[in-house]
Length: 314
Image (cartoon, rainbow, N blue to C red; front, side, top):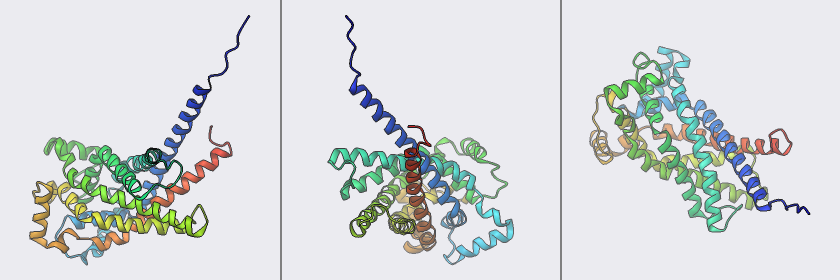
């Protein structure tokens, strides 16, 4: 007499959970990569000018003249010089950051008993900070390479690989992590406040409007506010990071984070030094962060709809 065993329900549930989680991770990685690429390409000229400007002692009104002079000297597309290096860094960085944020939200939501709902303020802030630190730790050398390509003439480095080779040979491998400490210190408030502000504004919007999903222009506005707050809070550390990253080609020698801050303040003053280019960041930052958050959300929504319609495998 044969006994037919019942299907292993637990195994089926585990398999379904694994497939659902894997699809969620892949969707987040793709959406984050696209969001980062679109946002950074849109503001690449301002971003490059900001990096050059932060590394010098010029007055702030020279920043926009620098864009025009670069255009006259090297042509329109020179304003996007270093953007290929930016993409090599931004695509993995944004993919990891957005994906990590979704995973941290889920884990913290499960831990605090808010699974599927908006997190309380502290875990909401924590999820953003942890996502930023995770992405930064994994992609930092690429940020160093981007900074070098942005502040040097095109004859100095022919491509991204050339930057790695020359820095490693002439300055040592540890140079690839120069400025890592201020970057990590800065990304905690930057990523934490950016994600916290955006998620909080979406939550408040849903409570007051009765709509679960904001319109696209509302997402852009929420993202712009998030970028403004996050970048303003972490900006001095961003200046310190750029000074330390570009020290090898600007003729300066910077050691520790505090030492670099002290040198900048003594030479240029507190406001003119540590907040150099902040007004430019108030133009660039909100645009970039608004585009990034909006692109991520809309891509996630599109991928979910395609999955429901059967265009993406179940």
